Length: 238
Image (cartoon, rainbow, N blue to C red):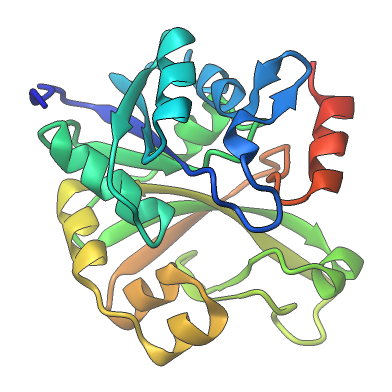
């Protein structure tokens, strides 16, 4: 595949068909449009030099291309970040900011991209997002929570309600911005006991000494993981 010459921001959206709780969800219809197309359209006005879907499924790729967006076919991958990393390399490593935006976030928009771009990328730094989360929800669901150091960087991520006994929490929004150097470093990081236990790849990055800067904001929306989430999205999506 020919390389893409690009400075600035490259947005990659990973997508796969095999989600256990909602198989085929990238192509799930949300009021007349496949979810993966809604995600791409939501950030299409953000000014990024490249927006591409990274997928190992030819059906997803065809739908994305028919909607006017770029699709990159990859091999199987253990995580969205690994899939994006392969696609980025296949395209010749375009951009000096590489954003991984999850393919099950149909409410994501340009504000998310702008927030990720608000922190300067660096060789040893990744940027991500977090939003307020009520104590009742944090205790009941498995959404990922994050606690911060005093300087606003991530101290720890967990599916549990952390910090214990808190009255408010920060929910991690699964979008990342990498510099080329930090992307290489993250993908070279080995799994650690904590990342295996929590099933969170970003903990392996923290264990490797990579800084994760966290931008806080409302970041309206929610990820689609279950049939109930999909029905809610259909009610709320225009």
